[in-house]
Amino acid sequence: MNSKKCQLCKIELNASNDSKEHILPNSVGGRKKVSGFICKSCNSKTGETWDAELASQLNWFSLFLGIVRERGVPPSMVVNTSVGELNLHHDGTQSLIKPVYEVTESDGVATLRIQARNEREVQQLIQRAKSQYPKLNIEEAMGKMQIVDDYTQRIVHTSFEFGGEKCGRSQVKSCMALASTRGIDIEECVPADSYLNQGGPANFGYFFDSDLVLNRPADSIFHCVAVTGNTESKMLLGYVEYFSFQRVVVCLSDTYEGDSFEAVYAIDPRSGTELELKVELFFSKEDIAAIYNYERSSEDGMHSAMNEVMRIGYQASVKRQEDKAFDDAYSHALAECGYKESDALTEEQAGKLSRLMAEKLTPYLLQRLNQNRN
Image (cartoon, rainbow, N blue to C red; front, top):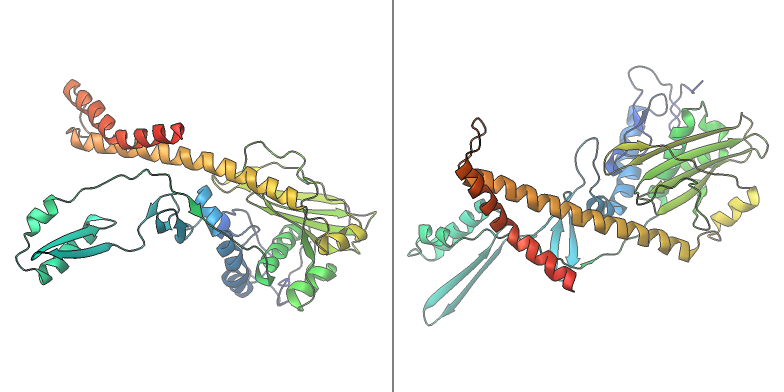
């Protein structure tokens, strides 16, 4: 039976202070929750510190891969691209960090160039120009406004670091959360208790020597947490994998006395779909020492895992852009052809619909053709 004490601050849990803790953080797409594990206060504190750090380090992948959270969306972030800094958003789109307002004067004539993210910003900037140049014709200026769909493929330059104490604590906490569903108390897990609660040494290490997921689905992106208890070896081991490439082995205990068991929770963060995975965790104390010492973190294995994720992510981003281009074209054509939802589409409207869709899709299709040529 699960301990009725918070596994972090050790206060007694009751109906008023118990919490529903995500086994994998909601911030990276986790769904499944466990009660009787930590109190509300520890849930809030670790979510705002440990889990927030992990989510921050993985945010680029959350945006690039289009994860779906149970609550909220991943925050937009600034990325360096081949055309300068832009904001990257949760739907895969990019936008200006701030609007452009440039005035050049030649021979007493002022030329105004405005780039904005929406019509409201355009209006604000034109009003700003009006205050500088009272003779400016606002209606004429607004009439020259063009809404442009930009499908240019920009190279995104990114770098990231994964690790550190807060991130590590989040990973170990995920393993303990899953272990708690099998009645495991943190006080039975000296390395985990020492690391999470007493400032002890880290009880995990990166692992890329082999694939511990025995039935890894092809062309898939997933998060996974697994815990295995082995009566014979007395090892209670955990495994955490984020976005199919950040792979960490955790030693919860090397003096395990309980029954042998295996528990796995895996999810596709792009859809929220739970996956049935098989994770093999059979390591000795000597193996764990080598893992802690970064001796089982093959650089080739890490690069191979990362390259596969980037390949899958790129294909998915192209598909997302394609879907958005067609959806936008369809919505635009419906609005412009005079169609009303309550009416049947007339033959004339159908003709306009196809023409308007083709016009709207042309920039996207031309960009795809140019990309394929290159």
